View 1: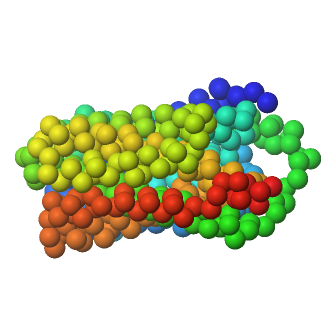
View 2: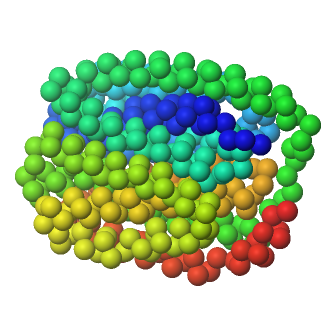
View 3: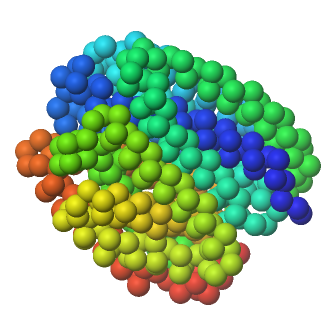
Length: 388
């Protein structure tokens, strides 16, 4: 079976457009904080609502589509993102912002599990490459979002968010085409078995360890993605636009790390990639709170690159542990990533209000140490025997 590159490219591009829309929300936090007189706790609650909406629904969507795949649900997810985007452009109270964030989160919950499944179907057996190719589109969109927010939204105000509706319409068109291909692909595979064997205790232990690693990664990344612009403004006296540009640099580093993580895992083994990307970032995270401006930019770039390389490897490794449950695993891990990121943003926002952002970054710097839990991972051969 050959890798279907046009479908992977379409999925990556649509993931870019989807996550570009979603990244506009944190990118305009400084504007919302200024215009709506919000504190850091309220900023964290906005992130929490978005991430929890996405995380709670994603495993359910994944389980449902494992039983009955829905090729055209991808375009429906993009429609939800469009509605949330338009509401966000007109949301001048915290309540409306929260509703808009929830709708955008719903779009994410529909998009990610099924698109991850389609990426695996188009992989031709190059699972790590396919997941990285798919995910780097999302990371690229997350990187471009703050840049476009600095260029378009910062000068013209919150209402300029509505101009990005064209991005959602483009995504719908691409995903409708992908849906047609996937519907045909499903027609060719209807005779394959659809009832996977129950997961064993060792499989669940391995999946649980991987989820804890996702927690440590995303809780720490939430401190950067949600509060990095404020940190730069407060500590180094940057303008809103300049801080958004450096957020773009950080998000671009995440995209690069995601792109390389999957293929490296395909070639050299996923466990090694996971080890290096989680524990290996610890020296850089410990140094970050004490760095000057130039080193802050360098260190956050390294942290973003190294940490992001883990997720494709973690996701594909988990899918290998639970064959026949691609949607469930995709929904569980994407949902858990969103949920822990949202919970982290909310808790860290409250903590920042009562202490300082400097304290938050010093506290979060030790989170990558949780990666030593990989020592408790069941032996690969034992888990592999139970997965077949």
